[in-house]
Length: 504
Ligand code: AMP
Ligand code: ZN
Image 1 (cartoon, rainbow, N blue to C red):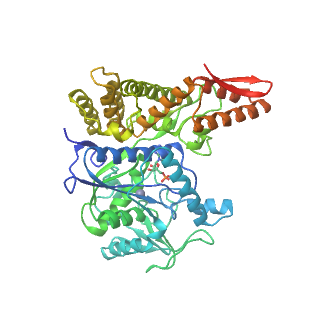
Image 2: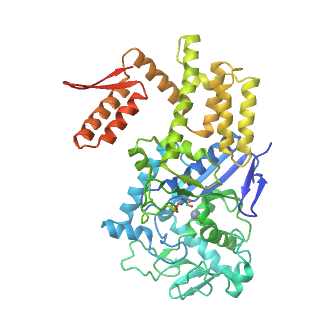
Image 3: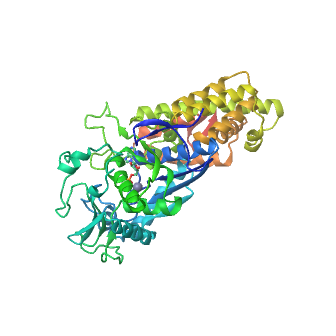
């Protein structure tokens, strides 16, 4: 079978044919670093990571570029609203660069915790202003721009394919119908779909970051950064471009107009978009609204807020991979519990394979040894089924069920099963072998009444946290800690000397 992907351009599944055989170049729209990423944003990066890992697994030599938007992204995706970065900087009394630096680090911390591999190239908008200016000059030369009210605009009527990605109706564009979804607040625009390439007339006093340009001192519009940086690192034509579905009608539509308007040729061959994560309405909370994630609705969840509730980042990764990237996913605590339990059960099953290998060889197998173990026909059958699921537009729910099937298959030796899982996990990214070895060691130590130093200190921290919780009458948290340790075989006993642990 060949890799098939759903191309938003044309809205159909297509066989993936790379520009250069055996290679794949792709660009993913990265974060705007004015706040913590919410767990919806993180879905977009887990999806990018899946694509990256799947392409490598399928044998492609991958070049993957992601941008960091540290300037110019307005709170509205068209040209209205405030600059997101500047708004936070003003609220915090910090400089825009300080804000960007802080949230860029927070972003990398989140993606590391989710086992998301770093892109080959991460590029910041503020470090590529010259490339943006050069691209805008090409657009100007090709007659796609006009100056109005001090800002330089892209004239969408000069680009006949404008709106193809979003399937906007061209006749509507010309006559002015079909503009319902675009609120025109900028009177300088000839057409509501026109967008700013370069601002010199900022509506904000003290615009923090400005650069000189042929159109005056100012700063770039948001969309131009992705065209300029992707072309710099991947060339004027590349294979895949991704983002969340919200980017289809404006951001990606405008990126295409700018890029193809400058080069005069097709820019990207495959457009992949992840569906949204929404918040399920909480049955037990009458004030819960559910729906879109936003700060104002109280639906803003970060990775850290999941960790604070006792989940591990990989529980969230597992939860996301349980759905196809093109299906909308409703987040709820019940769903997180079930992801957490299923991941735990998976690791428990794999740790039984580890135990079996130890029984046979008297040694805990190393990850290297496992990955070098020969896989025979039965294992290959599972790997082929797993590969086919990925080739079918990255169908992770099916891929995960093949992984579960492989674990239960009694026709393989424990070592071969581990080798199969290890190979599949290069795509799934749950550190399944490492975590199963850890669990095996933990259980072995508990059986002998010892805890590994790392676990001992974790248990001591949890005992201290439980004592604090009890002092502040947070019995719910205290019980949660006791129960979670009990589920790992560690029983807390409150004595007159304090709390101690024992194994059951
Ligand atoms: P932003 O930082 O706002 O540019 O968003 C970063 C990425 O997250 C983009 O690819 C968005 O399309 C994506 N995104 C935003 N909200 C969600 C959501 N609720 N679910 C999935 N992806 C999202
Ligand atoms: Zn972009």
